[in-house]
Image (cartoon, rainbow, N blue to C red; front, side):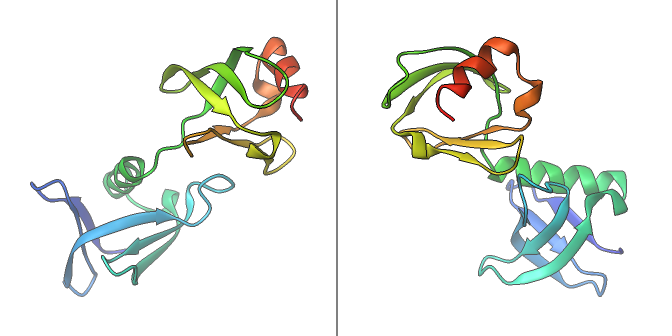
Length: 153
């Protein structure tokens, strides 16, 4: 693939097609952010029109891949839950004391329906403020965290 994707001094991203046409204020968007985060990436303009489809990030040069990943990370916010330290109760609403990939925090679980199983090992937990937390691999969590989670599943 012969194109350019870079960040302007203003902080916004731009895309230059293989024909040399530049598009400013573009976004890199994952089609499957949980199930296949490095597959099916679209570069879209400010109106949401797809400018480029990237089937797999690993097909790109290291520099392009790094820029696209950086753009997506800036746009997305889905912390991963790594550990549960405790819960205020086993009946919702309850407050969870958790460790995420972004640090320790608390989340408010309004109801058990706010825990969605996306696959056998992937869970999506939505807190009372609408923030979505991801548990990428339930089996990889420590025994105490899994015990606490089992009470809600």
